[in-house]
Length: 140
Image (cartoon, rainbow, N blue to C red; front, side, top):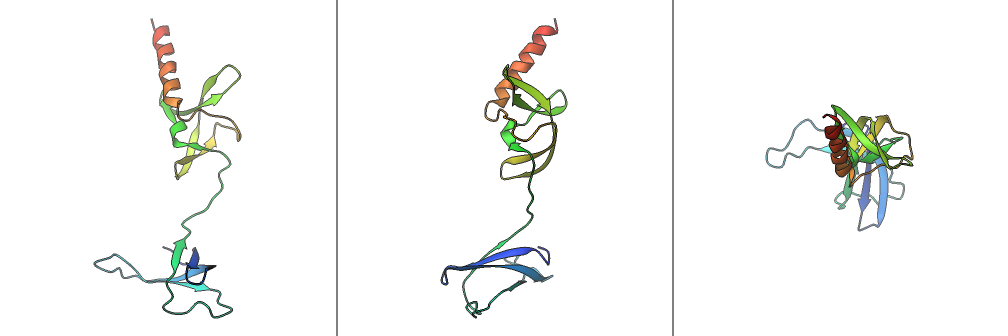
């Protein structure tokens, strides 16, 4: 964890939630539980947030918006390239792409695919297999 990261603190007993920022991260880890002390600054205008209150804390690790993202299942390796199968009027076409960050089963596409392009996800392996059959037939 890093000082300055955003946190969301919620208290089920209060039915309240507040945003804050980490302002201290302890350097010592507990030997048994690997826990460290972390302090965050929260707004407390009504004094409802008090010591001993049970809370849930979510720490933002990183947020970003990807212009183009596809399910991981849409990616295939073909002839030493990473490709996705994009829908065309004739069916599907293998398009080489460059990938970026990955999160929650999605992969950022940095080059090779326009936003809004439909791609094959679950069936992309079958399309790759068909592509392989076509190149095997032409190699004779």
